[in-house]
Image (tube, rainbow, N blue to C red; front, top):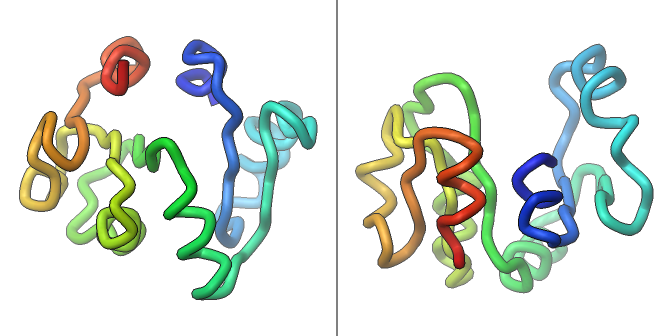
Length: 113
């Protein structure tokens, strides 16, 4: 949310909520239907449309992802991925080619510019 805000871009959040408490306290207060939108779970057709129309996929997770399925889906749609440089991300993303590997919010903000 902070990256999108600092970039002056709308953020669409899609998918199931895995941690209800985190969503309720950290995400929901920012969802305003305009700058931050929660789309809920989306089916395969809608997912391709959302990912294909996105400026980028933000994959800024705080654990070592062994395989990022949403990352592969975005890349298949031609959408670049901005991801934390950890886990398997360097196996999927070539920095500056199909996305950006970042270390913090500041580098995520400047990555797509």
